[in-house]
Length: 230
Image (cartoon, rainbow, N blue to C red):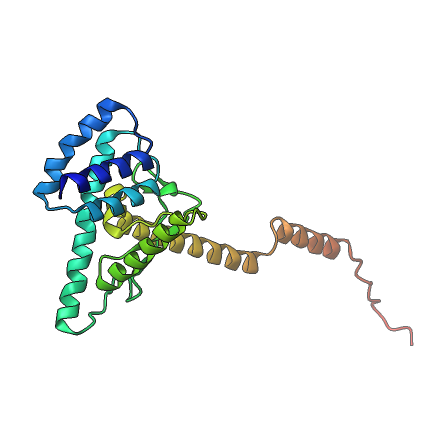
């Protein structure tokens, strides 16, 4: 990364995230050696900065650094998978996203509290790490940049599975727990309906029996004469 490329990215990131303090800008110079040790390019860093702007606001400088490092690393993993499949000339079906490139139905981060998925149990979707996911993410980021350049309404943020797991590593267990709760609720509903069918409304059986008994006891039985008058 040349000096001009580095300076251009620093300006881009600072403008995008409203970093104007001179001490913060000088501190960011320490990141250059870290990025260059991993051979990160200015283009990769720009994409990471843009994606960071679409996630939940991060007010700590350390959060910015960690996000940038992980985002570029995640993108490279996706691209490596896509390149490997391209070289093989075949598509390998991904069971995680079922070949769509998106992993749907994961617990929405809004409803994840202290590692637990809570009511109302909303769901979301994240980009898979397979070749389909890499292609989907590339197209998504192109659309984000296009809308931004035209001052259009920004697209909602879209996390990759790697970024998502940094914030919610236990999502698979959460889905399993939810399924168990769903089955327990279904069983409770079914057994309650069956109990209603057998027992009737609450309090109805007892009142019906009491009325029948009272009617029988109050009924008069006609007397039969000992001798027939005819």
